[in-house]
Every structure is written in structure tokens, then in C-alpha cells.
Image (tube, rainbow, N blue to C red):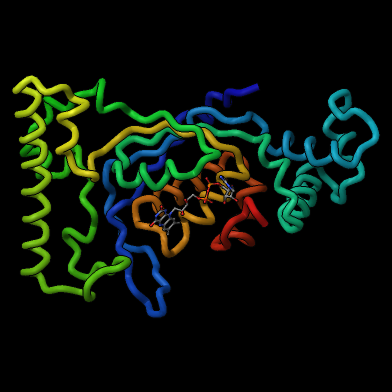
Amino acid sequence: MYGIPEYRRGWTFKVLAGCQMRDSGANDFSLGGCDVHDMKVELLEATPDPEEVICRAARNDYMSEYGAEQSFETVMASVEGDTLEEKKRTLIGHLMSHGHFGPFEHAQATFHVEGMSRSCMAQLTRHRHVSFDVQSMRYVAFDDVDPEDVADGELVVTPPSASDPDWVGRNQKGGSVDEETVAKREEVFTESVKRSVEDYQELLELGMPPEDARFVLPIGTEVNVVMSLNARMLMHVADMRAAADAQWEIRTLTEDVLDLAAEWCPVTFDYYEAKMKNRKNRLAP
Ligand SMILES: Cc1cc2nc3c(=O)[nH]c(=O)nc-3n(C[C@H](O)[C@H](O)[C@H](O)COP(=O)(O)OP(=O)(O)OC[C@H]3O[C@@H](n4cnc5c(N)ncnc54)[C@H](O)[C@@H]3O)c2cc1C
């Protein structure tokens, strides 16, 4: 059942972290002018024909016959539309607009994310209907990372506000700052993460286990994560995490997951993008 065609495997999006969030008034933030950082998102596995599964599940609710023994054309015969594609659009649009979200739970996808911060991971893993595997800091030791490279952005995610004088974030004291202030910010940030990694490595050399030495590492330390979720949950996560009040990193990650979802499950996520995005709590209509 699971497994996606070879040509669809490994779709990758470079997450555009470092996106500038500019205040255009009344908390209406927009993303623009992004620098690429190392976070990467790939679709690992997914239900091969998710929209057939969604439609079959939905039609099951209103059919007296047993649908599994019928062709998809037969199952969809009473749905409005000249082609199967049009019928899918009709039915999925109907389900979405009426809040009939159960059928979307049958379409599942697994994503692999490289290099998100542990801060972002803490936000993402609050979603209880998503399954995760998180790179271990007990069994993976970062003993061969050069602290000078950490100062240059390796191992620890650098927030855009460390170097962008015009960055406006949530709960920030004041707005834009001058070049001198932002240069100082960047210096403090860089020195701090470099020192943390130096201290971590020294503790390892002093015989401390990685699981304890990691306590000195910053919350921005990168981690690789595998996550699996169904299409309904993906929409719910997007409702909360692609929203203007979400933090830049999880927001850009979610936007890239949505782009991959639109390739995988196009009718559903085109509809979501056009008519449902930026509303909240899709799972509990
Ligand atoms: C901008 C923003 C700021 C946030 N700030 C904070 C913060 O400061 N501190 C903090 O702790 N969290 C914070 N959160 C996390 C937030 O409170 C949620 O815990 C998180 O987003 C998970 O979403 P969810 O509650 O929809 O649950 P999910 O786990 O995504 O579950 C989906 C839905 O299932 C239902 N559900 C799941 N479990 C239960 C349950 N046990 N009982 C009843 N219904 C359930 C609910 O309808 C829920 O919406 C923040 C989130 C956002 C987007």
C-alpha cells in the first residue's frame, strides 16, 4: 500500500530560513527576501494515490454496496463531473467545505527534515497526532565539529534577527536597530554558540557521557527528524504553523511541507491553499 513511485521519491525543498519578517502594520507579517540555510525537507514515503483513497473512503459512507469490489469509476459514478479528475475535485471540495475531514486521515505521508533547530522541534512535536523519530544526542556525539565552523553557522541554527537590523519578531523590545547594534548582536550570538560547543567537547574529553554533556548545547542546535502524519493533520499543523504568528523557522518548514503535499495530494492541497489556509483548528471544525 505504501511507497511512492520512484520519480516522486526524494522531492526536496531547501527551507528558506532567514526569511525576513517585516511588519506591514497591525501584526500583518509577510515573508520575503530569504536566505537559504541548511534545513532540508524531503518526502520519504506516502500513500501512492491519496485522493483515490480519500474519495473511496468518503463514498463508502453513502453507498449501500461494498466499494472495494468496484472500480474507482463505478464508485465515483454519481459524483458531478465529466471526468474522474473533475469528480475528484467536486467530491474533495464538498468534503472540505462541509468540514467532513475524516476521509483525509486515510492518506499518510512521511517527511524527512534535516537541520531544524531543537527549538523548532519542540514546537513541532507538540502535535500529538504526528509520529516522530528524532536524532539522538545520547548516541550521536558532535565531537568532530570545529567550533570555528559553528561560529560560521554549522551545527547551530542562526536566527535571522542575529544579523538583520530590520527584523521584527514577536515580543521584541523595539523595532529596527542600527548596524552597530546588529553587529554586536551577531558577535554575542556567534561567540556564545561557539563557546557552548567548545565546552561540550571539553566535557566529552573529560569523560562525561554525551547525554549529559549535551546539557550545555544551545536550543538552536540542529537535529534531523522523520515525521509521519495524515493529510487532515497536515492541514491542522499548517493552520497553526503556517500562520503569521508562528515563528519564522516552523513557518517556513510548514510552507515547504505544504509545497510537497501539493505535489503528492494536489486537489486537496490546492483547495486548502485557495480556500482554507490561515484559518485555525481544522481538526476541530
Ligand atoms: C503561535 C503559537 C504559540 C504557542 N505558544 C505556546 C506556549 O507558549 N506554551 C505552550 O505550552 N504551547 C504553546 N503553543 C502550542 C499550542 O498550545 C499547542 O499545544 C500545539 O500547537 C499543539 O496543537 P493542538 O493543541 O491543536 O494539538 P494537536 O496535538 O495538534 O492535536 C490536534 C487537535 O486534536 C485535539 N486534541 C488532541 N489532544 C487532545 C486532548 N488531550 N484533549 C482534547 N483535545 C485534544 C484538539 O482538537 C487539537 O487541536 C503555541 C502554538 C502556537 C501556534
